[in-house]
Image (cartoon, rainbow, N blue to C red; front, side):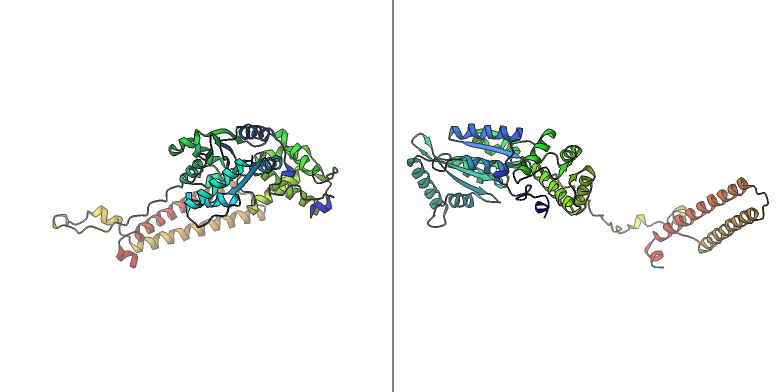
Length: 393
């Protein structure tokens, strides 16, 4: 692997969140400030949203490393499509609570008892819910109900919600989440990194694993990385991993823009570069309505009339006419071939030839041939699209 080739002690751009590689970009610094403020309040909900791969999980992992476990008990869950009752049991499991029975009431009672015990021991309790966009409105309302657990006037549980951009939209706009919105005391949306932060980010992660300057990077690489990844940390990690791998294979000591272009092209071909930010899913394009084949209505006696001659002529064709047209086409092709032969012989014999005259004759015949073929094809199409007896013939 490239880490051995470049003398690195570990892989610097792994996709798994690792607080050891936490890089405090401008937007992460703001998020950490909001988290600090929210945790100091000791109640309600804190909401952090961001694009896929923006660093939400790494941010929380970094935060967890700064929390004193003697002062705060933390439960963490990553949600899938959970309903309200399932969520209650998952929350209990996150705190290591044994629930007797499998009913919701038993789980709620066990959670409340746990929260009271923690409060009496002088510890606060924080629940971290990742991938909150997967929760139903009913499940989110169930989470809100946890904020009603109190010991006297002291709230027993604080909740940190992490989610993708669509969760932010749901929380802001859904009419059934008004009570939850009123309990949000701090919120921040993680933005992408700025262009000037790409180089420090890459150098920071490399230095965490013993980077000594090999390989070096062309400055244009950082600008192109921001443009191609949108400044999303996980996408940057994907691309730089491929870059370092290519560099080790080709034994490069400098990463340049040509290598980056090759990697991006390869990733696009492999479809290994997913979209960074799945916002609300676009509405599917309606499928075209199936063609309705209308069967002819029964003909009433009053409508039973002979078709007009002009209409009948449009649905019929004289086979002799087709043969004459085809014969005329063959004659024109033969004339064209003869004209080309005459022109060639005149040039070989050194005889002066009026090239423009020959070309004009060829063009005129080509035009005639094209009109003839178009006319023939048109009548053949009309013939094929005629009534069922003609089609069968």
